[in-house]
Image (cartoon, rainbow, N blue to C red; front, side):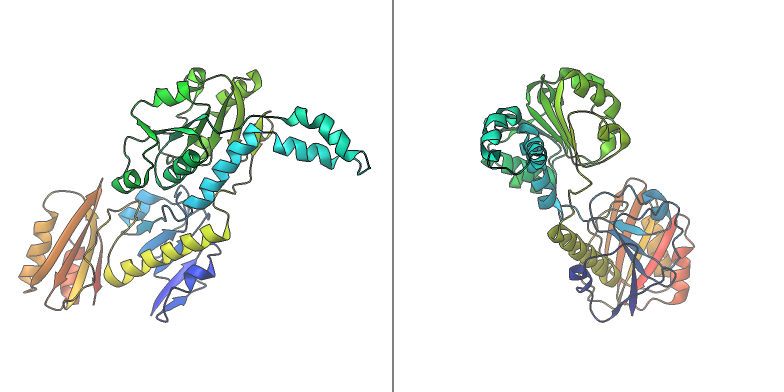
Length: 387
């Protein structure tokens, strides 16, 4: 019996994918795996029996990735599962920024519902007039699962789309419309585009990537959209640009005192992936990732360990080892197994930065003494035996 614990409410559509041998535990202490959405785990000490954490969403800034990696805890996320929900918010954001729909609605709500309301609306409508997005240039920074969907949708809406992503994946490239200009110089987007939307992860290298210098390059009246992470934008510099009219509108999904009090901002309360469909999709993906890891040792969509798969084990057993990415580890593993007379039938090893993961299928049963010998190798974080 495997036990899972949910730190946040997780969609039942996903949890129902767990078969009968999985049990929902109210306690973190006796759980094998953890599902989380927004709960802050940075101050959370995981019990030794927890082997994996799955974030039902893409962002993992609420999880101490390196600390957990050193404990041999694999952290998963669910890239692309909420992409359509965010894409629709970005498209809605462009439309709201282009035509003062919100202002028109708010004005009408304040009027008395008299017989003259229709005539009054006709007189006032020019006050809320705007422009169409068809024919305008859209710059997309980051062509991951969300960026690609935004790009393709914008093409169908008649926009001229420029995309920047030096690390675009093969899958993303295949899914990208041929009509999109894939550029290598980010400054082209800043200088040429009427609308700019950001879809990159928050890293040290991307924090405040759009600041005063980048804004200065932009066209007067540009619309900036941020449905990724608030810290990607230097919002103090942006506030000055909004007050000066350099930036026409800032559409963001992240509320804070600065943007909430700055004119010409449209702030939504983190609604990007807040749809039933996105929450269901994220939960399903997270559960499937955990099951494949617990039962087979396979890793897919991890953010602190390399993806690594050996399919389903058809031998006597499988040993998985979380360890440092340093020389001479594999030879030590094979020696420990060889000294115990354990025959290796298949082995795969992958690394990601400072961390590595090794899967070894064996045709000889693994004793507790062998497991202990592997755990005692310097640089090993965790050893699991899957039978």
